[in-house]
Image (cartoon, rainbow, N blue to C red; front, side, top):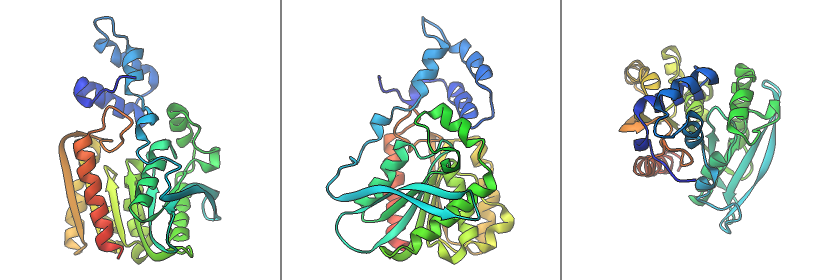
Length: 295
């Protein structure tokens, strides 16, 4: 598949795709809306297919990389959906590591998120990426099916699953006892949620283009946070000002970066919205944040 970038599409197409991906537009309406961009022999279906992820592009760290160990673990979650399964990656050498929870988008534990966990393992962390779709059979290997399955999961119980997974990771015998969390889209919002749910049990958080926590919950936040926002992301960005004002008022530690002209999802290297320069810088900042606060 030819690799396209956001520059290959009108912004309106990217905005429509964003709405569709997040369940705010039915497929029929989305495809009909793409019709006006289907010119010169290009069809709406072809445009749609070109926007879909290609997970071959996400394999930046091979599963059999000799420097890491990977596998799947299942965590009991009695307050949530019973259990939550996830992908565990850690350095091949050493006995104890600082820990980072990796939280997926609204599609479940796809290959991109597993690769992010491996990237963290290569950087010296033990990383666990839970699958919020565990209770409905897990990530189905298909983006559209994953999105549909995601909408059937009990949201409150899924939150409890991530809380449980975070504490399980922090308390593992191969954990040094400090916990970070990074998440993307839905996962970014979940990092903000964990920040007030976990309090002092979270030591650092990095939400990528995630919905903000309710202002009323800000006093409970203890972890230093680093926000990674896309410039072209009106829905998420609408909540920035009030959230950061509350964080400042409550004397919470945070840094906020907005990558102007970039799209929601710019770190996900499997879709046209990916931006290599912004993704690289944001990831370098993320690792620096964890290095500073997970000593």
